[in-house]
Image (cartoon, rainbow, N blue to C red; front, side, top):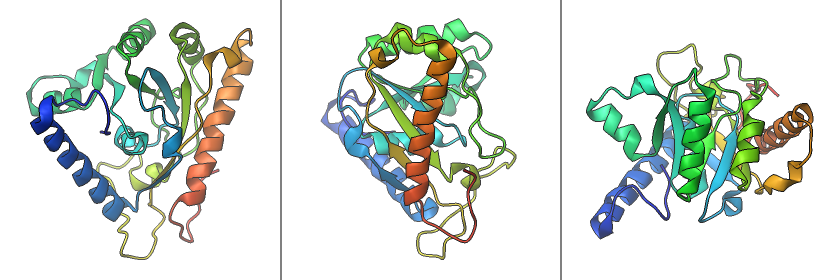
Length: 234
């Protein structure tokens, strides 16, 4: 979730409902996950933007939306959209169904959202990390940037893997009022990058540069994360 233009609820009453949801989630994660964010001022307040981030846990879209300051669209595998309350909920907060095995389907969905002036969150790794370390980026992200021609916003997440590892059924807790336990979560939003800065660059060089940008944002997030004696992967 996020706040700003193009909120998912219409009218003044809808805005009140949405703001209530936003603050409920914000304070729940601040108190329960020691959530922190920096670089919020870098996020474009309006217009299309491609948000690229490392992927650590199932709640990453929420962590990033809170730092973005505006609603985000994000891709989710089509198998999650089976009707019912959960289906409506994730659609309301920006989830877009795609066929996970069809890269063209994903690119087309992102471009459609960008054409609507939305900010779209994409995880270039293609899946959550199993180790906390950032996986190599999929080559499709370079094609997406070339076709989208919109600002790219690098975002780094730190601690989300420790908070909810992929191998665990349920998330942990990192209560703000208790001593640090290594599961605190932090997000850093980097400065937007013009898409033409990669014009003419070879694909492998472009991917390496993108990984470096997201890695820099990750380290900035790690620097503000509520610390403990437990070290996070670098």
